[in-house]
Length: 150
Image (cartoon, rainbow, N blue to C red; front, side):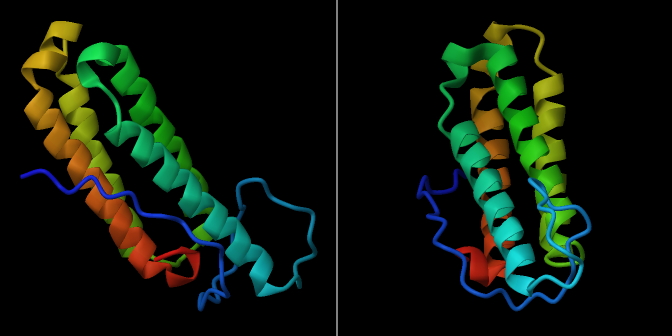
């Protein structure tokens, strides 16, 4: 079953209820350790937006046109964005981020099984289902971080 293709819009950050200190936010600033929680929230929101953007790009791929290389690049972009979010979010939304990581691993396993661009066409339904799982997991992350558009 395919998930709907609705794009989740990332709205501007409003104060997050998270009190977790970011360990190393992507695009880290030189703010002092006692900086306001809004700085960490802004970093988390920026990383949530990056994850959503990379997942939207993944979902919108024309698998037949981009082939195995294009799919691998898109999956790598989602992984990179998730790494940034994991760094900035600290202990916030851990279960949801793990669910996203798991769904991404399932997609990577399907991607790893592709031997040619023709195999992308053969497995388009399986890949589309795996991509929909990643998209659903991102929605879970956004719901867990309501200050970032969830």
